[in-house]
Amino acid sequence: MVDDRMDDVTAGAADDRVNPTGRFRIYLGAVAGVGKTCAMLDEGWRRHERGRDVVVGYVETHGRPHTSEQLRDLEVLPRKQVTYRGGTFEEMDLDAVLARRPDIVLVDELAHTNVPGSGRHEKRWEDVVEILDAGIAVVSTVNVQHLESIADAVEQITGVAVRERVPDWVVRKADQLELIDSSPQQLRRRMMHGNVYPPDKVEGALAGFFRTENLVALRELALRFVADETEEELLAYLENHHQQAVWDTSERIMVAVTGAPGTPGVLRRAARMAARAKAELHVVHVTTDARTDGGGRTVEQVHELADDVGATWHEVDGDDPARTLVRFASEHQITQIVLGSSRRGRLEELARGSVVSRVLRFAADQGVDVHVIARRDGADGASRAAATETVAVT
Image (tube, rainbow, N blue to C red; front, side):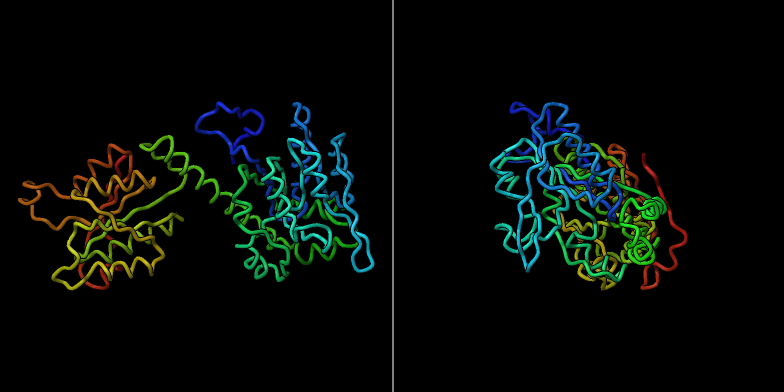
């Protein structure tokens, strides 16, 4: 997500300085075979060529010649030999990594479960956290199905149990998260050519976990996870550096609500707009508005409706509702504002100015689109909202 700053950050750097206690880069893929390990080794070699002290803490080539070639002349630390239940296994030697103390260590398969008795941690990601805490940078790899928040969904999609899992907070700890992507068709071709699994396992894999529909779903999960991370990073950056700017990399819709008649229809219309745009929906109530009205529709009932449509509810204070709404929109990077049409009489609007007209004016200065929705009384008002007035301010 963030371009490579691991090499060039100095103690005098200001706002974009990376955490000096250890930096973390993860290559994320939908499934095995997309090229995560090769990308990790290529990154390690590039840094080695630039003069950094890089070692391989653990890499799993799975016997793939192309992957083995990517090791080139990188220093590979000896693995720890562990005897368990009559067999001999190899694990990353955490103490050897800490004693060697390189600038950067490459650690494959973040979700791996260590063989019992091989060290002080059950999971490889715990080893990585200790390495980071020691001030050593780490480049690692993980497949999307191993993320704790996604593993259950993957089990339902594929019918395959996901036993090795990584807490989401570990992946979110990464300063750099990069998606290594490949189309389902390309992955299946790699599989048939023997570039992922041994020949005797290819047919079963293609008919099972590597079915096209599974690969499509896993790819979408990976894309969505990285997109969410990128969105959070962008919003944090804008908050720190460009508070007045609105970057419409994705839609974020805000609807202003009161206890006035017709408000539920306006909220439902906004919810449909958000669903069609696959956008976040924020419902904002300025607390200076009346909390009840003659029609008996209360703000609390509107709040319940907001919960029902999956929106995020906000109560904000402000003596000037129009300015308060536009300020909220600016602070939350809102790209579209939805309002119900004004019910004030013409003379009252001329004397005092409607909230709608003032929001239109203030939003124009911020470059935010405003949609004005006709209010309709009655529970079925939203279903008859075919005729609406839409004003786009850019």
